Length: 234
Image (tube, rainbow, N blue to C red; front, side, top):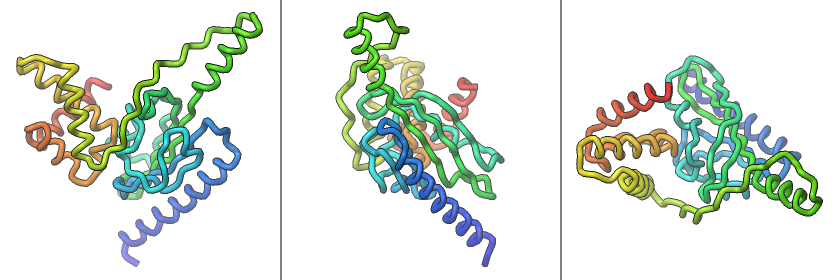
């Protein structure tokens, strides 16, 4: 067996074991806790296993395009690392309808440092907050303040293609940064690239090239934007 074939076999075995773990944990996890396994080798059909899928409305076989908004796991997956497992504990993401979630992600890399799997846990505590507020109202007992549930926006429609999602992202970024100055145009493009990064577009094959075409820049400009965003984040 070649070294490449051996690596593929190792990754496939790991994915099978992680999928079994998702099913086992999901069988006892509370209903507000989604557990999802992504096969990052196939981002077009990345969800390899999922439990409590109603939390985000996704299903097995969905692509990374159906993922959460502001998910820094996709950003981390693009970064170079020699760690076999990168853990991202307890960070905030948002579902397609704007509901805030508490998320934790473990990213698994192969021997070549390339990410091949992501095991994610997403918890929707919105119902708990509403229940506590109701109990406080009914009992008259003063409980520690619970942040009110955010206004839920209209759910985003699933996108049929990477191009459709990019058009929406670019439109949103341009709307938030109107103006004809060069600085305004760059700010809008930078915001669009950041949102594309958070949605996992650059994990897709040809994602950088498609983004460059959509924004009217070169792929080297996209890489420069990504480097700038990384510098700002650090």
